[in-house]
Length: 507
Image 1: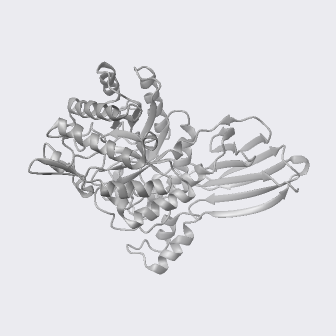
Image 2: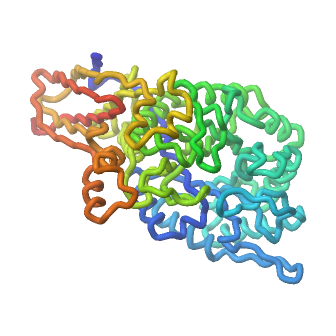
């Protein structure tokens, strides 16, 4: 494929919405040293603005208890988490969940760690509790800081596993009381929902989206942002990690995002922010594809093509230190993380790193490529070779039966793609830096498979995998006669290559 670019041609603004938010497991996991190391590495190399996690009010955070009927709050663990986040340049995207046990109306729970999913036993006390939380964080971090945060009411209440009986009216009661309480403290704080689950068969129709927007308008409820979880699969949940997933086509994110856009534009809230607070290639915590080289091009392709359709798309999650159905039994177990338990960068990590290197202006785009320009004049060119699932492999039984490495048999593997970049308007000499990812360069999963997929990684093996997890990089000084440069690159299946090209001032 030929790509023709003049270095001085005008471009279109690029809004890097993929850098706005990233997910985590439950807030209690953010107290752990290794989770903090993983998040710090992410923030050093490809920083996000916000992080969203479950279970802020879960029992392990010890935020609420009652003694002789008297409510007692304790924010010390919350403070430790938020202090750390803010110290490394990432803000809370606050998910207000789950119900503190002493405030819960029933015993129903979700996940191995048993987050309570019932409404409060006392609505007035819930309002009091929310007010105490909001006033505490304002006192600690300042009103101007907290006004930059987001407050999302609950998680996926349309599923019975996350909200008792998936009771819409009970959720609207929770939303109304929570939103109004927050706004009473300060009307400029940002609140939204409904954080609905994957769309499943209803392509382009967010669960509870239409009903929620109508109820908010009819009841005159505050609403600053709309949130949902557009996973590209036909099954919206896989809590036990059985891997029972079926995948839609490569355009599924675009279809769902356009459906949300149409829904919002036709609602009473056409201009509110659109934050899609969970997304990955599937909602299963045991999907082996999550570890593979597939993820890099998947992340690049989807995020680039969905520009303009949302204000954030939050990848689920930072780290495989993640315990919804207990921690995985092997170093690569299909977990959601950008980083595995041992701190190895997974291919998904590299997908976001590549996106983070794009420029502020888009000069050209097409099938498998994006040409951008940074403020300093450097051209940042992304090239990728995305391979989707085979039509006849859309069966989770095949995935469950696959041994490590065999998972690639699920994909329609395209041949290597050759891109030729024809540049004009450069100086007499340029610096070309090439950074490459494919199964042989930067895939810790493939290196793990090559060493026999050990269930326990010895220290010496870990050193080997750390070397293999890094991207391949090459830097060259190249002559550009009359300001012209022709540069060809071959991108392997599942591969992504970044070209960073700038004119050398001294020729």
